[in-house]
Image: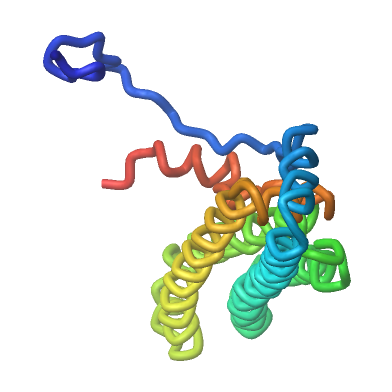
Length: 227
């Protein structure tokens, strides 16, 4: 039997496809079959019913711990973002025409650190954090071309150190975002594991989480010519 998907016999999309993240949360729902399943366990005897009850308690505790891990992973990204903001605050006064860069960024950072991401760091918080990352990246994008245009500024030790620190923090942010996205993928998978986790998630009103995405400006820059 031939392969269902065969790149040698096509069809092949020569122009490629631009992959995008779907900005949508999917709620967990269970049908009447799940209720019938639980009732059937109790009809079979107290022991099967109790075993499944304890399994649901274990599943609820697991999902609660996973939510805390999501918060911890997101908080690590926040920490790196604040360090980048601090770099901006220290460097901007040294660069001519770089006024008010840190003001806009600090406003964005304060927005999501002040509770904008919701009680469990849901989609609104993810969007706020994405917006803050875009604001910080945009600020650095405005600052560093001015540094490149003035050799004297580039040779300034404080600015040179800031460039190095920024490169390091950007790598750490990328790694932290990858870790967060891995946890989001785990959450999105586990809440649909029937029967225990899915039943618990549905009754708790849980939904899928949206991973971090690149801003439209970043995506456009990535398509540009750098060399």
